[in-house]
Each structure stands twice: as structure tokens, then as C-alpha cells.
Image 1: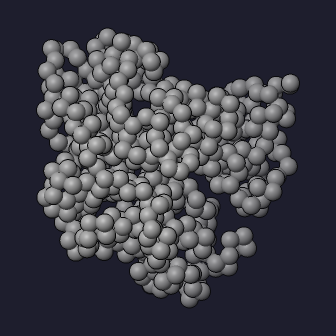
Image 2 (image 1 turned 120 degrees about the vertical axis):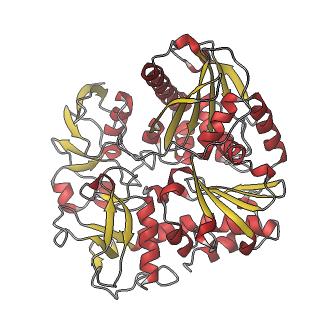
Image 3 (image 1 turned 180 degrees about the horizontal axis):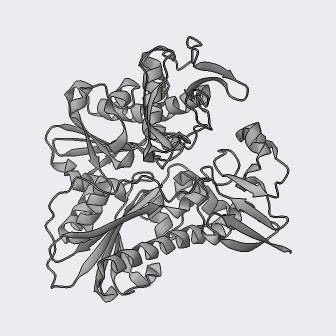
Amino acid sequence: MNKHLVIFEPSGLKISVDSSKTILDAAREVGLHILADCGGIGSCGKCKIIVQPPSMPTERDAQHIQSEELQQGFRLACQHVVEEPIRVLVPYQLEDVKILSEGVSRKWDIDKYQEGHYGIAFDLGTTTIAAYLMDLVNGVQIAQISSLNPQTAFGEDVMSRIAYAIRQEDGIHLLRNTILKEINRLVMVLYETADLDPSALTRISVVGNTAMNHLFLGTEVRPLAFAPYTPTVKEAVTMRGVDINLNINPNCEVYVAPNIAGFVGGDTVAFILSQQLDSVKDVVLGIDIGTNGEIVLATDGQLFCCSAAAGPAFEGATIFQGMRGQNGAIEHFQIHGIDDIPEISVIGNANPQGICGSAIIDIVAELRRIRILDQNGRMQKVSKRVIEDADHGLSYVVVDSEEAKEEKRIIFTQRDVRQIQLAKAAIQAGTMLLLKSLEISRGDIARVLLAGAFGNYINPISATAIGLLPQIDVSKIVPVGNAAGEGAKGLLLSSESRRHADHIIESVHYIELASHSDFQKTFIESIKLP
């Protein structure tokens, strides 16, 4: 089979690939991260690149790319095979994504070590990886680093990656090797930054959702794709660095946190640990508003949890001009009058390129407040900023290219509204069913703890306004940062915490929403906007 050269710009990376490979395949093989939220099946439209010489547009290209961009050579990387030598421009790189790696710290009962022992705690998020270099002697954090999870090239959410692992020969090995390579890189960067002897690496701890833990271990993921979604591995796993191809000190201990259920994993265990949720007396609700949407309800020493499949809409994945929180992303939005130009803030003070999750919630809340959206989420043509877009129907103009003197018009479509309604309904329904299980009303909630990067950046007023969070006094809503990362530190530092984690997975009450008799009814009711 013929091979053709692909040159990626502006990185300058080059690779020769078979003519059966797509541009997205070539990018994956060379280690270049191109957004592919759907896993490369052409349904999300996020893998936009510019191809020179341009190939003929496909039907999928036409569905997801505006006509003027098609003329400029924009194509979907997953839809075009490499039939000749080409040059590919990747317009938006991922290295500048705004990633939260700090959590609200707590003190841990650390193990006793002699001088010169260090460890690294990893939080393997679906989208991001956070790594913390710790002194095991005194529990002090020495350095930290964050990066995008390179598995995003195989799909934005865990189900896309599980599907890839199942349908592709050696798919799970490719996904595992991708994450192990990145972990090795982060380990080396941390040790070089701190100027430490690699032999001093004594232990690594790893927390992640159930799918991420399985993909890290290279364990069979097929059971996670089908009901009853039983994890292949539930207990904590301890191994050696050599088992994860660790380049420095292959004899160090590697600890992987236990999983609670098919979609509630070690990151939720770490969240519970770091916030000591199994010892609270008041009613405390803990929510990680991510793709999986883990929810924990704690009261009087009892723990109840569920996973609400919100999908990647809050990360911009299914939104027409949505994007991650990187330079050029609109992160906050406010409007005063129904026809007024909105006030926006953009990450990096750059020209706006799209909308990230925090602003997406602001937009829905504000459009509902000024009645551009009705309770059912239907867009009303009551403002000059609501237009009939040729490709997307009724849409709200967030940024007008003429009035803002910008190159790009940014709109929020009726379909975008629907995507957010479905995502927030999953979280809202999960929260309501947990409260109902304990016969607790929202007025009984003492605190709502928002974990993860997204929870740290959203406006709680907007989140409560659309029903994503319970409509309570916003002073009770507390962002706790990367609580899973903080729990990963505890699991690294403390054998007592590791024993505690084993106890948590045995004592927590897991509720499977998909089989709950009231889920469908509650979910449908939650689609409405307050």
C-alpha cells in the first residue's frame, strides 16, 4: 500500500502513512492532539483543519463547516484519507487550555519515611491530567503540572473511548499506551523541574473514573459498555513502575484507587476522602459537573451516590461554536437589555473564537431571564439579536462581526440550547432522585460542594437559574477545586487513607439511575428551564 507524507503546521510534525489512513489517524500516530469529541465518526464537527491542497468536501464537511470556511480549505480530519502528500494546518492547538489543578487542601496522617523519598499523585480526568510531586517525609507539595489527556484524540467522553477500544483491534492497548506515554512525560518534567534523583521516586497514586482506571490498567472495558455496567476491576490495584512502562525507577510502587461502580470511580472515592464526606452530620451535596457528572449526597455518616451522564456539552463538545476553556474562549456573558450588545470576557483577552462551558451556562440563564427563551427552551424572535441562520435556524448572536469589529461571528443556536437542557436535566434528575431517596428537600441542604475545574469557574447564580444546581442560597454553594487531586495526594501519603478508601467503596450506597423507576419521568421534567 502506498504511503504519503503529511506535514502538520504550525508544529512542523511529519509522518508518512498508508493511503487508507485518515488525517485524524495520522495526527494520532504522530502524537498531535486534534479535537475529536465523537471519536472520529464525523458527528461532532470539532476536528476542523485546513488541507493543502484541498480535497473535495464530504457531506459531513458540509454539515459542520460554514460555506466560507469550506472555500478556505477547512475540512474534518476524520473524513479525509491521505491519498497524496498534503500539508495540514491545525488552527486551534490545545496546549493553552485553562486547567484547574489546585484543590482545597486538608491535612493527612502521613506514613513515616526517611529523608529522600518522593511520590507523585495523579488525577486522570477524562479531559485533563493533574500531577502533584510530593515529599513523602513531610507531605509538602514540591511541584505540580497539568496537561490535556491525550486520549481526547479518540473521543471526548469515556463511552467514545470504550467504543473505540471495543471496535478497533488493539484499541485498548493503543489507548493505554497513549496515557502511559503522557504519564511518563509528566513524571520526567516534574523530576527535572525539581532537580531530583529519579531513584527517589517511591510511590505513585492514580485516581480516575472507572473507565479511565480500566484504560490505565489495560483491563477489559466491554462490561462498561453494556448494562449492568459492572467494572472488571473494583478493588484497589497495587503494582510496580515496570508494569506501566515507567522510565524512571521501575521498582516504585503504583497504587490505583478502587472503583465504586461502572461510572463512579476512584476519583469520586478521592473526592469523598478529601472532603471527609463520610463523617459530616449536615446534609452535604457534592457534585462534579463533568462528562459523567458524579453526584454524592452525604448526611449523618451515610453516603449515597450516582452518575448522571451529562455528556460533554458543558465542555463545549456538542455546542456549534463551543470550545474548551482556552485562549479565545468566551468565559463569561451578561446582557442588560433585550437588544443590547452583550458584555463578554474572553480568556487571554484574545479575539473570541468560541464559547466555553461557564459562558454557555451564562448564556442560557441570561436568555431565559430576559425571555428570549421560554420555559421549554424555545427561542423567541423578540430581539434583533435573534436571527434565522441559513444553516442552524433560530440563533442568538453572541458576537456580531461588524459591531465588534471581529473576523468571526459567534452564535448560540436553538440546538445548542437543547444540548444544554439535556445535559443539565441529567444532573438535575440525579440530584433530585438522591434527595428523594433520603426524603430530603432542597431546603435541608447545608452545603453544595462543586468539584473539578468546571465547578470552579461557573457562576452559581447562572447554574441555579437554569436548574443545574438546586435553587438554594448561593452562599451555600462552595467550589472546592480539584478535590479528586487532593484525595489522590492523601492516597499517596497515607496508608490509613488507602484503607479508608477500601471502606468507602463497601459502605457507599450506589443508585443506578438508568434502572430507577422514576428516572425517565424526573429527567423529562428536568428538561424545562425554571
